[in-house]
Length: 615
Image 1 (cartoon, rainbow, N blue to C red):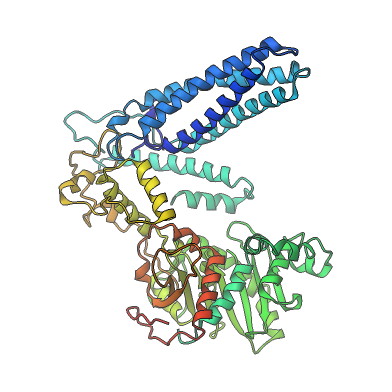
Image 2: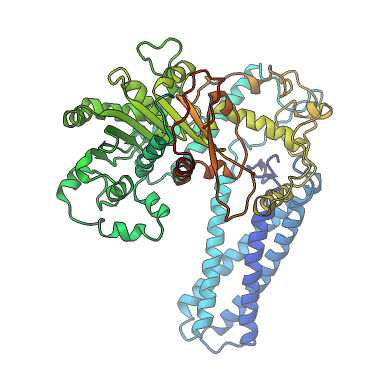
């Protein structure tokens, strides 16, 4: 599990992480070698064209280089599959194999250049199939070299520089972090890591505008890596939350009919609509919103597709079916003082700024006043999904004093959102809907720290190689069966093995240091509450599958819903559904199934956190 040491530094990839990428490349290389051999045998080594000597040398050399690469990949895959996660001893020869594989990139690069030269200068009189095969080989070589370079960038560890080992009498591990030297080292290491991750984020998000807000957001991200409620209403408002994603989600949810329905609306000249719907030049986003919500163009007060860091798309519309004014948004802590709320008031910084942007647009630009001047008897409903749900919840808190009857429906909101005081305050007007084992409502820094501790305890006591664990997990998900006998808890005998951070590939068995207590101790740095606790907004409706956990692919899924509380989401659940349960189309489908099976309102329940009322 610790990073592999090659080229004089430690990298962000372990020696047992090369089984699957090595096997994939091995498969490609074998097919490549077979194709080249077939071409060479077909022509019997004799080519009737210009530059046949160069072509002959190229193919022979390519066969030799590919054979050497295949042999090195076989050795890498075999050695990488040895040992266990915390026992890298059988893989001690991996650095030498990596050096060998790196050396083989040199002749491959030379042969790729040679093939390109032959194609451009001497390939005109040759068989088109032969020329095409050489071009394919050259392109494949450059693609593999490119992906290798990108992979090196992402596994580069900014903290991997070799540093002097501690004296022999000092326990192996970190030196006393109370010293000024240790504190300075950690500060420098954190700064370097932040810069590297900021560069990676800029590379991934290169299409975003590089203004001051974007730079601040990248820097912030780098520092981290009710009685009025009914299910029919939730399903109805979820359609609006899903509509804010625009045409991509609509096409994904309607693969066969969606393109046809939108094709007649996109690119159609609508002067009035173009003046309102900014940032949607072809009109496809707005057309998909019309299709999803069933509203008419005249029902929309304001639509904004302006999308930048902390400035999110949203729309305001009149819903005549429910007689509500709907505001839908697709969207380190920050103080969020609210009049009448006792206790510490703070919220997620980025989401608060996004909600603040929408608040200013709605209030300062008079958008809400315009809406209520058209329909003064309507009520205000705010809804959103995922980060938009978080922004909707914060926006509802900001607007609550001005609109005492407003309601907010937050679908799959982020877990690290509100302080305890604000979360309790929002229970009167915010309902959060969470599906199954959704990751996002459980995602917070304390939960991630807890997950890290649990994973360390599990892997330290698991006696199977990493590739077998992954393969058996895939097999279990696809074909069912009982989970393996990998232990999930750590016995007391090996508790001390995790008394210090993982600094090397040598072993987890490290002598005790006074700087760190056991990870199981509440006095451990891992348990130190370095981050302010944040909670889900409002009352929480948890939707889960009803019935056996495993069923056939064609069986219909049934759901149930229960009132829950924020403490039920204080740990991350590892499951194949942790990502799919967050998708807006899956949430909408679950709500639709639930209301179809049980078309009645939730039973009223008290606001006590400990009470759960089933539907």
